[in-house]
Length: 251
Image (tube, rainbow, N blue to C red; front, side, top):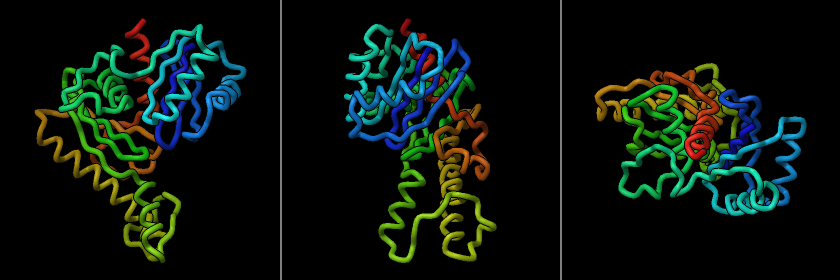
């Protein structure tokens, strides 16, 4: 069984693969203060009752957590083949940007998975701490993209800077015309971010000869996908699938 670990700024997602099928997955909060010993206790608790882990593939956008993850893997999983997505690891994804080392490991993994599943050119829209739009060429190359503040970050900032506004639940309001402060905030967040994605996709589309798919992923994707006119597919496990593909390429 392959354990895939995607360490994001807000959440960490774990998935267990039996060959190609994903048999189980978990989402836990990411805490940069968590030690290697605390991490292994959490992971062992989640994996209890599952088949034995025979391989591990991981990517991280949080340096502090990555350091503790390395320590955990060395201390508790030293006999298991492990791949950490970083420079020098074969991904099969050419990175056609000014500075390839700046590109987050999760964006590279998403590129690989999207091209594997949908071909290209395509766009990956990752709704996480930030909203990332990553452009994949017909050959599976990472061409670049756009980064915007995430939905929750934007709402947190608004609540902190505006005395009479507060955080609200991210659900669809009765109408785009909010009849109270809560509905007005929900309308601005939901329809505003859907419109942001649609606008960026339209502009990116003008730079490409064709577009085979616009693939949404990330924890907040289910909220926005129904309101977007440009998103064509929703794949919540895109990063985990990409980690599996990289692991297979390096065996």
